[in-house]
Image 1 (cartoon, rainbow, N blue to C red):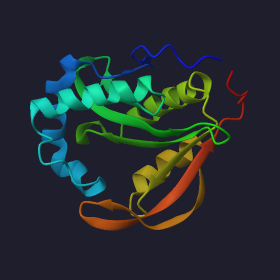
Image 2: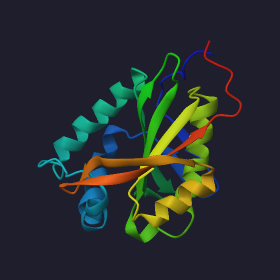
Image 3: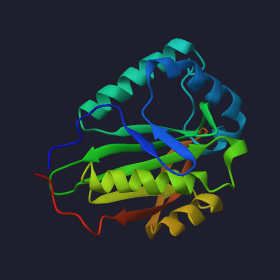
Image 4: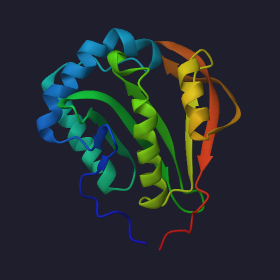
Length: 193
């Protein structure tokens, strides 16, 4: 199998469009992270000092495009079909490792008003299917802080299995945090051609 054609990715579900960012999305990305900062900051690494500048987001979009073209990762953005211009969340498949490993890491977050509606579950089902069927990954790993019960339930519902605890795994909001390590493997993996 040849790696995906490397054009921007667009996945559609019943309620969502999950897609790559385009340059014209820079303003909406800035708005999303500015409005969601207080909600997201306790769960993510410290933001770059210029992360609320429009030019920062233009540079990020270009970096994500290169990352996808180089088979290093894929960043996707969630939009509800009912509100197609208002960003609702993010999914990142990062650090693609090929060779005998064929894995990546998964990260995700939603706008506060979008939580509790099943949107991330819906988006991740489609994204994981794409990761396994189109990108030909064998394993996706996702890690969460022990106090993040919502992520624990979501990953369990998706079939991820707990593999252990990584002590002081990531610096989150200026503090080293333990993480529960989980993974999901592709039961139909046929290799890459």
